[in-house]
Image (cartoon, helix red, strand yellow):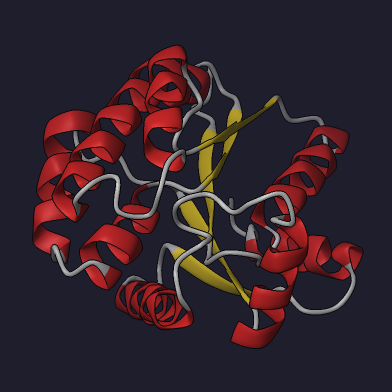
Length: 207
């Protein structure tokens, strides 16, 4: 059986990753693919248990180093229990966030550094990388407005951080995309949801 594909959707808060992942999955299923929708942190029993530790509580609950370790542990279980088995049986796996989020948030915005995050990923997940990463791009003001509308009942520990923090995240994502153009596709997230989904499908050309 042919190997499947592993696609990650990345970006800061409020760019529409979760909504677009569902729409992209539906479009791929309509083309006859077996599609698995998953997320980080989470996507497996062990990783979902760690998710609540990472997202609940106040912004200072964990040090950046502790966060990096927790994300790496959750990702290791996610890869072993969900992503690799699905890809190996020929499915397309779409993940709302993967390693690049750790590189942008803990590695970039929190200052841990790319090398340390990649080392944790090598230990926990044998360095697995997506076949393609779709980076949703949205002006900061529009992303903040969308995130605020989404989080009326309270943002998680990351969404509630200040504008300067989110600017550092955006800059880190941009640098990652510039450094790996073969894997990344930057997708304009403005306009209607259907327009964005069409752009995402186009960005999978060649797979």
